[in-house]
Image (tube, rainbow, N blue to C red):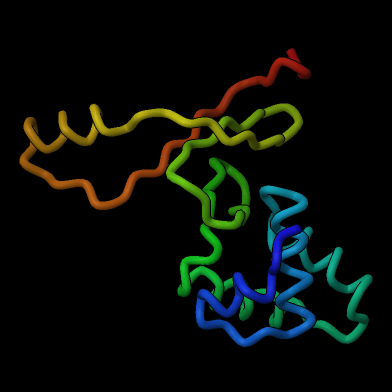
Length: 133
């Protein structure tokens, strides 16, 4: 079983019931928008505000517990930080799937061609998933 208390502490975040619930939902859902997260949290904490969700997600982003996934033509979603990976985004059902792609070749090409050292990469591929096609 995953110990969310330890995870929050490892990222120097105070352990609160709301933060534990947010981390749990991020773990269960994989990728979730702030609005969808708020809809889940309001069922558990009837006095929680959307601003509280934003504040907690921003703190989790700053501490690298969470990362933002930018979705073309849609609002960003958030996920627990994992090993480097990319995303497949279905334009029909909006499902987001993690995929591992070796981006080192691309980074090396950029370095040699443009003399630009890449410090961060993010790759999302949009299309239609097997279920929708």
